[in-house]
Image (cartoon, rainbow, N blue to C red; front, side):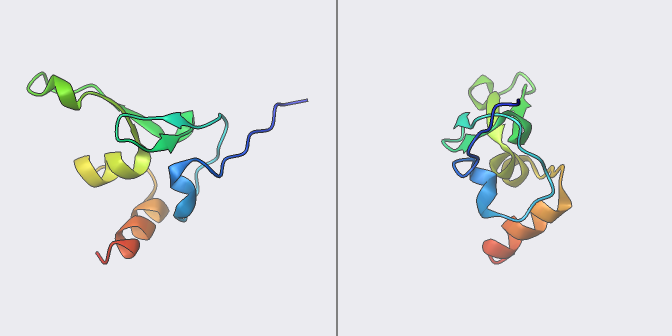
Length: 82
């Protein structure tokens, strides 16, 4: 039987999205908690090593303007008046 996780602590859960959960959430560089499937690693360009690391998908999309899920993008932008 597969292990069940409570995903309510994954930051993405407060927004509409089409992405599945698979792992428990853990803290990310941006300060939010996110499970593995909702985390994106920014490897940087070499100009700012401090920016490199794991971000929740919401912060990654907001900072770098790259959204892997358009439903999530719309929900985040609507919540922020954009």
